[in-house]
Length: 330
Image (cartoon, rainbow, N blue to C red; front, side):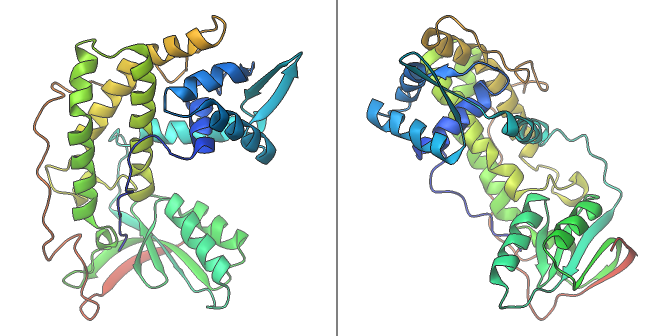
C-alpha cells in the first residue's frame, strides 16, 4: 500500500534553485528571451530570498544546466533551456488535467509482476520510482497495479531497465480476499485527508481572490505556493476512478478551488513580473480558465477520515488474495 506521507511544508520550495526553476517553468518557459538577473533577484526577493542567495542560486542552476545564462554587455540573463520546454509542457499539462474527471475506466487493472535481484538495489529503486510516475502502486511484493491502460509504457520501463523476470497484464478482477481489492494499494484515508487539508489551507485565499483583495506581489507568491501544493497530488494519486471511491471524495472540490485560484491570480503575477522585466508582459498559454469555478470557496470541506478496517486501509498480510482474468501485455 502506498503511504502518502505529507511533506512537512506545503509552502513555496525552500531550496533556492528549485524556486528559480519553478518560477521560470511556470511563468516564462514559452518565452524565447531570457530574464535579466536583476529582475529575477527582485522576483525571488518576494519569497524572502536575499540578493546574494538569489544570485548564487542562478549561478549554480546554470552550472547544472537547469537554466541557460547569456550575457549582453554587463547584464547577465537567464532562461529555460530549449531541450526542457517539451518536458515542462508535459508536466504542466499533467498538473492542469489532474482531477478533471474526464477519464473513463473499463473496470480492468494494469498489473506489473516482476522480480529484481536484491543485489541490484539501484535498479529496484529506479523501477519503483518510474512505476510511481506512471501511477502504479505496490499491491503485493513484486505486484504493482494501476486502474488505467498504461501497460505498454510499463513494459517499456521494465525492458529499458533490463528487468527480464517481468510480466505486464491488463486484468479483470474475478475474486478477492476480504482486503485484497487492488485499490487497497493506496491509502485512501491519508489521501482523503490530504485533499481536505488542501481545501482548508486555501479556501480563505480563494475568497480573497474572488473579492479582488490580492495584490500583484502577493499573487505571485500565493500562486506559486498553490502550484507547489498541487504538484504533490499526481505523484500520490493516479486519479483513481470514481467507481472505486466514496461518494464524497474531496478531489473534485480541491480541483475546483485550485482552478479558480490559479486562474484568478494569473494576470496578477504577470503584473509583478512586468514591473521587473522592462515592460515585457509574460502570458502563459495555460492561463485561460481550465475548468468551472466552484460555487463557493468557503464551503465546509469534508471531514478528515479516521482509519478503519476495509477498503483502502492497512491490509492483513495473511488474508489477502486476488484472482484475475488477464490479457498479457508482455
